[in-house]
Amino acid sequence: MAIDDVEDFEEKPLWKGRDAAIIGVSALLFLIGLILEFALVEKSLAAVFYLSVVLLSGHEIIKNGVKSVFRGHYTIDLLITIASIGAFLIGHGEEGAAVMFLFFIAEFLEEHASDRAKRSLHSLLKMAPQTATVRRDGKEVTVHSHEVGVGETVIVRPGGKIPLDGVVVKGRSSVNQAPITGESVPVSKEVGGTVFAATINMDGYLEINVTKGSGDTVLSRIIKLVSEAQKQKSESEKFIDRFARVYTPAVIVLAIGVAVVPTFIFGMPLETWIYRALVLLVVSCPCALAISTPVSMVSAITSGAKNGVLVKGSSYLESLGKIKAIAFDKTGTLTEGRLEVSDVIVTNNLPPKEVLSIAASLESHSEHPIATTIVEKARKEGVELRQVTGFRSEPGKGIIGSVKGEKYSIGSRKLFNGQEVRFPEDEAARLEDEGKTVVLVANERESIGIIAVSDKVREGAAKVVKALKERGARVEMLTGDNERVAKAIATRLGIDEYHAELMPEDKLRIVGDELIGKYGAVAMVGDGVNDAPALARADVGIAMGVMGSDVALENADIALMKDDLSRLVYLIDLSKKTSGVVKQNIVAAILVKGGFALFAIPGFVPLWLAVAVGDMGLSLAVILNAMRLSNIKPEAVK
Image 1 (cartoon, rainbow, N blue to C red):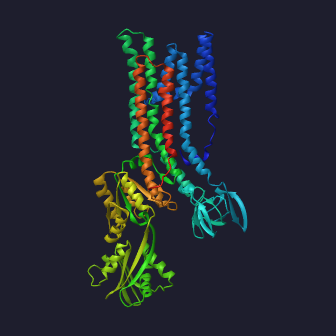
Image 2: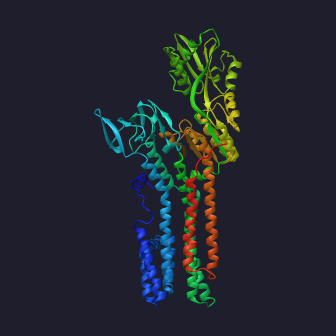
Image 3: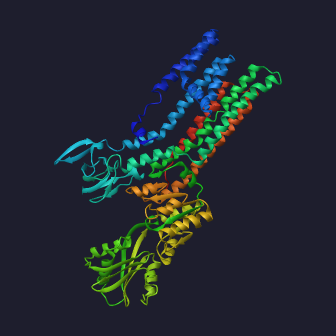
């Protein structure tokens, strides 16, 4: 199902359309045939009406069945064609017509049910307004959303829907982001804030600079990725496909044996055993078995999309239910990722602002998140940033440079290994025990200060860790922070084990060599950007808060559109419930069809009942059971 299919999809009532008309006409013809045969005893004329039913409702089925013979890949359509024509040949025209007619109804209802996923995506697509109010040449004009270019300014008034992704350039409002995140609690937006297509401007006037065209919005990308995911097959689906290729011809051979052996070896009536063989053919159709897994996976993926969770393939959803360990990146995942300077401690006689000025001057040449945080703190405090010479970066350790001719070093303890500079360890340890990251500042002779940077632990993170452990997953944390900070966070959250002072390649090694080697199936949760290698190596890579990140959407197997850790618990539960429904469907299909097959050989099952219950009824039961998954919603984590 491509995104074009979703855009072109037109929802129709069940009783409208060509197939519904065929069902109505076929039902009338079949009823006339029954009246002619059993009330007026006009069997030859009745046969004409029965044949009309077969040709009208079954012309596509017969055509597909015949094609499958020439392709050497026998299908369910072939089994139904043989059963229907065979019934005619032995004088059971009414049952031959019933087989074809009921199978057509089953196919019709299955298609209608499977369209539910497409309807869900189509309704999501329709949430984005078709028109937008744009300011052009100083005037407000209304145009189709497709006609709005990147860089133009759109105007959204209170109660209106935002037509395209963009950045607020004027105004302030609360925005309901439920179509993207699944969370209806409004989010405050002001100048500089990012907004997304299909979200609702609740109470303020907004002018928005468009950053993405209609085909590139977050909503469009979600629909495209979910559409592609629904076409991918899990390992269970692939196995059933392989099984069906062997199973269908085997059933045909078995049915021939049922017809031939009793007749030619034991001298029993040929017509009786051909009839029973035809019943066996019908009850053995693997329809319910074939759809048991895909319809469940599609329903589950649709549920995720409606609740702000983008699953990019059924194989990932299936794998998630087998996960034995979950590795979390710390910053931006278990913590909010919004760093701030909490302490500036002087270790000599310099004023605190002087220490901050020296540190910020050097850090202004670095792109590291901690560096950016220190520079922002200096600017807020009105601290002067000075010229730096001889700047040098030591990856994973810190930076070195000169200010006013004096050389300074800023970084972690690793940077000062082998040097005689001493820091007040008790003070540094106290800060680290509080879960803060310590940045050491020194000149060539002595330490001059300690800057502590804190990152708030996400609300509810401890509850989520507990819930995941209750579901049988071991929880481990990966971080570039030092041992003491990592231990403080891990202890606070109840994490089983932590790995500190890691570079990106270390995270890859731990996930790939240690965790997978020790536990088997492993999931990795991160931001999808700087931990992309580890996400890719894990059996399931999960990226958080990816609404504005194209990179994260591409890197992750599963993407959480909102920074909400509780969605992980929902995901695990959804995966396990999906696995349960798949097993229910497969077991039900095997038991029902096996039971019908056992009763078919002695002649206890008529042909019409084999189709109505053993095929059509069972297939619909499987679909309805699977569709329950699309209604699963996240629950509060306790």
